[in-house]
Amino acid sequence: MIHDLALNMRQKIISLSLDTYELASKKANFSAWVRRKLLEEVEIPPEEVILYGMYCPKCILNFQHPNIAVAKTYKCKFCNGETEFDGVIE
Ligand SMILES: [Zn+2]
Image (cartoon, rainbow, N blue to C red):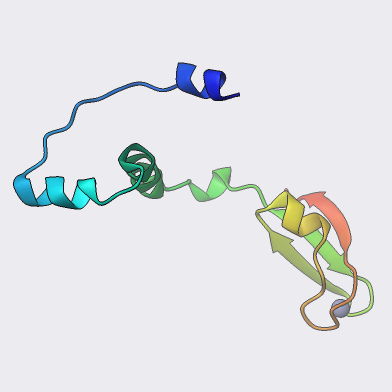
């Protein structure tokens, strides 16, 4: 696993000023922090966001969520009952 992860990594040298070097030195894992910050800037176009649907038969209400694990175990936010998983919303 770790071996596979390392194979997918690339290195890039960056230049830091004295003050930013100090800040970077305080990060336990600077590389992971940079990767996370870069990914935070990536905006997913609305048409690429997959939403899963859930249905509460008791309240006759539909819900949606982008996380499949959350969607499959979703509790109705009004009655707290089990919802039916409807799969991907087209
Ligand atoms: Zn409900």
